[in-house]
Length: 179
Image 1 (cartoon, helix red, strand yellow):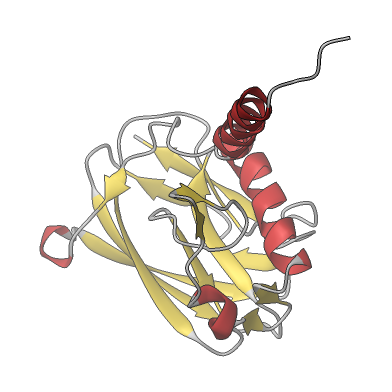
Image 2: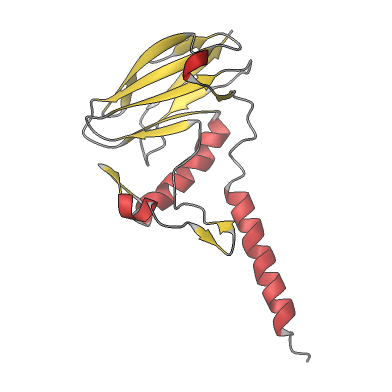
């Protein structure tokens, strides 16, 4: 029986880790849902209230190419997220959010700012589940107001959702109709 060489074992481990990290991020950036916008591009403002497991309004209508400034107010008692994407990307992001809760990066009432200030790379590779920095998403702590500016592209199946564990499943999701 031949023993594995240390170099080949290391290569196999690095390959597996690289694949796992790439797979964990597979739900992001594949959907053509638009792009981050700028304040100078804003066509209109939509105010969104987040309560304990609801959004108001329940649906949003936008035009292809329109830039929306979302003003997001959390009137609830727990942390909420406003995330633009399709169902598959929300499902992938829900796994990441669960990891962030498990590792202490997030709590039911907010962010662990000490954890988020840390370097989240390992040998130049981003560690999945350690930060919340996607441009199509914002976390809003209880009583706080945040903004997100987004330019929409023509697509179908677009949603806004809260991917805090359990919130999407309890109905904290709504359609965005792009015309």
